[in-house]
Length: 328
Image (tube, rainbow, N blue to C red; front, top):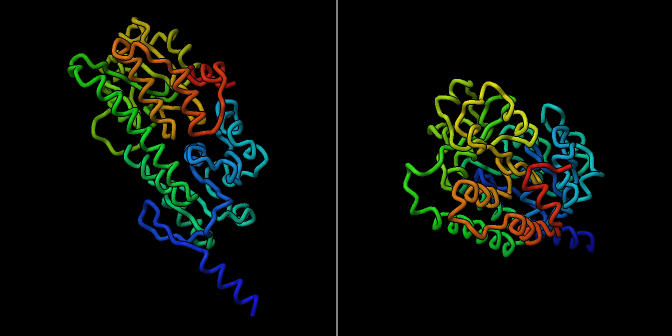
């Protein structure tokens, strides 16, 4: 009789949530063990922002096991002790995942969701089609971890940064907004569609914004010359050094005028999808329109964000390291 009563209580303690694909997923009342699949550093950044990095039970995938992602393990030291849950091809390792027995799995790819779903594990789809999904991801995280106030605080911060920048650049006419290219010098690609959004939100004009829906776009050196951007933002400090001495691009306006920058990198490179996206917009706005942000102190902004949302007290040196895209 007692056993039956306990089972009944356990059943009633479960709850149902709707993920960002509209799927109904059943979770325990308290989610204590979480796995992240696919763009693991991206998803982890949202788990950090909701204050639950200690629930992560799988480690970083092969591509993120370098100093560039060291802040993942500084914020959540448990990551360094956990097994990988996906291989070099990013396919989920189902046996490992089942052995870990997560209360919830987060993924951003529909095929991964279907694969994990077949194991019986509860998996939630996190959509990232546009910038509006950032808030929806955080609201879902708030429901999963029962931290709705924290999710609301992040959303208010995000909206506040966007409004702060929008107000500052509102009077800048289109013809005075800089043409900007964010790209990988190594592959000659603009790697993430989200970059078109944050460049525009910061008061710039993304030269790759052509209405496409594909995640990345590839181009030739000739196309870069046709665009002749006012500002170049590259994927790493190494590429920043390389492009300064690359004969192919020596005559570009941005190179001649030394308006080339490396994207900052914290828990993930800021030009990609990350919970740090509001910092990306603020940093870029300061680059594009420095006279409109005379008191902007990005070191202080980064430290405040990390303290408030990642529960991590950065030093000035660490904040500068992130700002220059150079974690070591």
